[in-house]
Image (tube, rainbow, N blue to C red; front, side, top):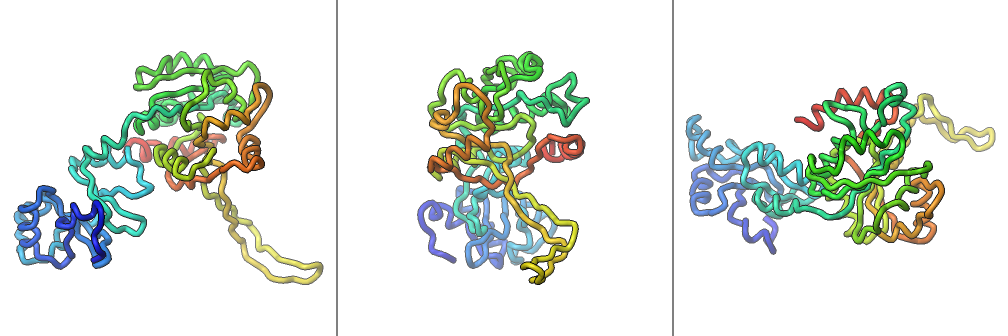
Amino acid sequence: MPELKGRMKRIASNLVASDVPILDAINGMDRNPIKIILVVDQDGRLLGTVTDGDIRRAILNAVTLDSPVSAIMNRNPLVLEHQSDLAAVITQAQNRMLRYVPVLDADGRVTDLETVSELEQELQRRDNLVVLMAGGLGTRLAPLTEDTPKPMLKVGDKPILETIIARFVDHGFHRFCISLNYKGDMIKEYFGDGDKWGADISYVRETERRGTAGALALLPERPKAPFLMMNGDLLTNVGFVNLLDFHQQQGALASIGVREYDLQVPYGTVSVDGVDTLGLEEKPVFRFFVNAGIYCLGPRVLDFVPDEGWLDMPDLLNRLIKSEEKVCSFPIHEYWIDIGRMEDFDRAQGEYNKVFND
């Protein structure tokens, strides 16, 4: 077992090897104010957990107390890892009536043990502004968008934009500014001041089309802290707090949410040098990172946004890069879909309940 340091010392007595008899585990739990056992391997990697309920069920099922604790452990416990969605972990813990959640490092080793109440305190109310871009025409989703702006199209049982706002609120964010253009009155009438969702919503309206970044010049006041920006036609369960924390840890002026995208050539490719054939590859797959339409931006980004005219986010980010400002990429491995085409809309309808209502 690795040497225990720092916060690990407080839970050293909760760690046991998989071959420890159940009776020894019971005696250890009786002496410990933290009523959970973490079963680990010799390198400290979590194998499973044992709670008082697991022990009682084992006794009722006539499991002998000299059996190894691995025989009754939960092999798929709820855990908190670096990339975990904190809000989702808390919700699962509450639904399962758990009191404790093990914290793991990238290699699966136990680093701490948090109570659910401690996690709830970490998910604090955040004053960082969230800017939602909801002014697009949505022409590729016509005729659905002839009478309804794309962010107000229903996926599942609610508009796309409502799901987006609810996800941010679940993560502790409450200040929103929505950029409006096409049929913006429908959006403003539906959400109002945001009180129904526990949010404070303001609006800016484009009098001319400004591109995906130009509307930032219309913000009523300059943010004093990093703010999040997201397109209003996305559905994702990415951890927004993780993005904000990543941005601040990296000391970036801008952080871009990126998604891995695979492109397979449907034919065998041939590498040539003049008339000479150098090699062949059958239907190769090329991997790229694509812009996911989710950003964390420092207030100074607004210095690069003109008061008038068209500006798309790629142009703004390239301006920052050319000015040698730090722009970082934040990989998104969680669920993400850009509802830009009819096939995306249909796919989102089929996936919504499983992703957001399970």
